Image 1 (cartoon, rainbow, N blue to C red):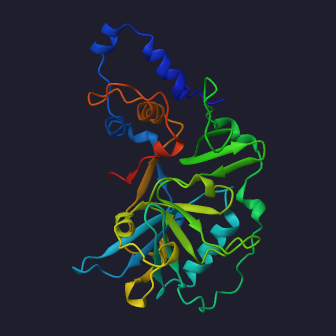
Image 2: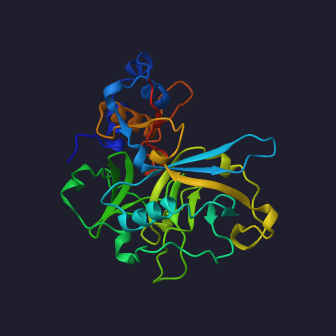
Length: 306
């Protein structure tokens, strides 16, 4: 088991200290912990694991770029492989954002559903929504005192990603900004041509029902601020409402893409940050919550400081 102190147990330990000791000690906010993390605690994100989507400029002519980090092995790799092929084929160029559902998702792809897909895309079985147990699962954080994740037996972090687990295996979680694969009714699992990102409260009920393939690490505001669709499920009803996609490329094929890095989820700073997110003790707060939903501990990602 990783050395992380249970988020709930740490709250109990804190409560056990005398009031006078609590008042004397000052506790940094999560943002302050991240800002003071050592340079060696940050992990570079490879440009080949980035997908850059340029939208048409906004009404004031300002560019709109969305940067997505693709999820690493061993998760969802059949779909990720398809997405790499679609980007290489420039398939999304000329497609659009065609669905914006309030407190739920933004979806993009070919609104006409007539654009031919490139050859060689894999058909991925739904069993691949879950990765069977494997040796690396020792990182899992479990709840204490009988308190568990509402959607899984356990949850935790692995190489910078939020995951949940049960006796079946491990799977990524539908947190804010996560990117998933649109599909029709099962057994269809989607090719990766239709994608969406979460812009509302974490829809964890979708876990293990749809493939998650990445997360938006920059530019989510260009999607979350879009007008909501008035059609069923938030789809835009008129062509002029859709937001044109100019291009989608992998990071190593795109000019002027900054380097990004994430705070290692194995680091001391991340452990302190996770505890602070679960037990806010900085001056604004009077009562530490004693715990946090996994989606309320977003893994910090930043542009690399040169």
